[in-house]
Image (cartoon, rainbow over all chains, first blue to last red):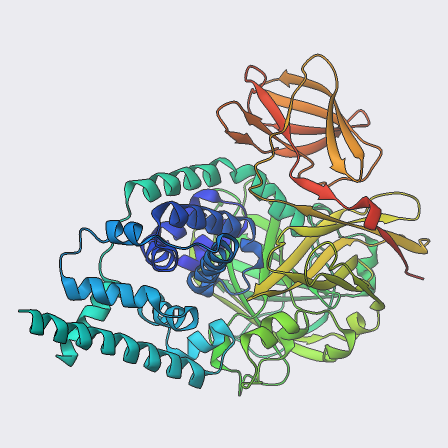
Length: 175
Length: 447
């Protein structure tokens, strides 16, 4: 069934239709929340709150075609609220534990570098690479000029690139 | 090497990431909760839907429509959308038809009051319809031509669909008469300003403003699915909206409620022939902030709909209520908030006597009786004070399962919440997640 048909049904209170839509996007939503919150228990809470909020307020969705970006926005808001409320400091052990399955050293380093980006840079990277918006759409999403978004993406990649090649060099020296 | 970096970056950000059991379980619980809440939410949406008023519509062009006998809106449809007789001031009746896939759809009339837009139609099928049809509709409104409409609206839909309702008018289910409800505020008439951000387009301009409504505009209505029938029923309607403009009364209030919630202000009360609207700002932390409206005869105006749009930390609110009687000189407005997800411990439901529930501001609601009949549970309650009519309270069992009312009905002068299952063999608590700010109520002169 088409997305817009499902959204219309969901707007009429059809929970089954709403769940069908969210299931299509749950992996992306998980990746977004995971990147912002790290801990799975926080991710679970944020996703649950976002999905419930979306269901309760789906009548406010003005254009059915934009369901995907709309629910991403709700989720990111929930994640930001959790981050701000909890002032969560992720213990190093927790992060390492989360990454124990990642064997490649450079990948771990890059992953850490991504997590340590400032929130504006990180959000731009998430929206570009995970949600799949282009720079213009990210600008509309965040209310920032497109030029600012381009600049943030460029700067974020420069930081990550620097970290990546720096550690590559360290590894090479250590051999 | 640079290629490796890009590849690793994309792998990390886009690579397959299995959802772990902990999150999977939480998601499945959430999905089950939503499926269980179906009827409750449906009820809420229907009540939050409800419409209004008119726009004079004349037709031109479009997919060779034919003109048909115009039919009045069914009274049951008007009742469903909460439209009283005031709509006669702002309705334009007309008839234009389009036939596809054995279904002829005639647009009968439209009612527009500056915000709510109700388009009524009749569908005649050459074979019986299996069930009440689901209508897949898009609507685009604009002043002048479509030239210059930004890509933001390339989806050919800029009017918010709210709800639909209709009934078969014959026994063999070949003729169906209904209406589709949309909402069209100031921002719907402003499609060409490319420089504006989403916040400006969607948030700042979610306002009802008679001075912003053009004298006439075009409504492109396209239906591509009607029940089982697929096709293209397109209507290009020229709307004369002067009637709406001439019947809107705006009262500036600017009541600052930020002491209750950040950024919350009631800016205006807007009275039309079919609705009383409250309009203002909210923050993104209080999605379920709303108002109870009481007229000067102490009757609570029925809450008929609403729209809250949020972006970043800002939000705008429009609430639709019954139109206050023309005799009313004032309305009293009481803010409240429904704290979704709040883990209130609740009060045990007393099956042998009264159960008292706190409403806020030292006021109470009293559950007087609980009984089961014909597979349903009925919870009777009374209160001297206006309450959140959508959900004054809900029930929770000792396993933490929440039960939302399926419907509200007055029985012999008492207020009753009805649940579509037998619940009284469970250990139940009554939870009220709504706080009504009675002490912060205020009165607005509307005459």
